[in-house]
Length: 140
Image (cartoon, rainbow, N blue to C red; front, side, top):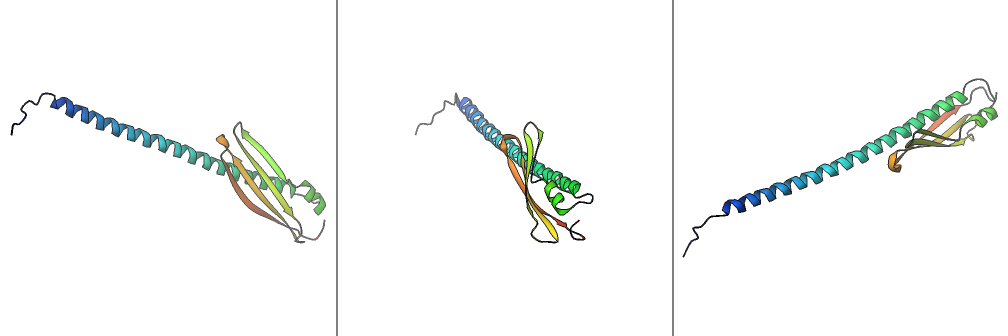
């Protein structure tokens, strides 16, 4: 059997194969970096929306505490309670708190609220909770 003894061009073929493998490796790494960057950005927006919703809870609780100060009748107190609050933090972030007030328990007022935080690209997160206000000394 006659072997080929002419190896001219073998280095070129080997070089092209190495360059091709190197480019495939770089392309895969670029794709992974891009995908990870998008995931991190989405996660940051979700965390930001959650924190803004919690900010809305703090804001609403502060508003309720301000209403709860001083001597007043239950009717006056109920009339002053905020049922819906919306605040813009900046151009693309805001929170909205919607509340449902239940005074049927007699000796307490229960406020059920939902705070919705909104960030860029309309990413939202909700936080729900309850505030219970005990009525002391009957009707004032």
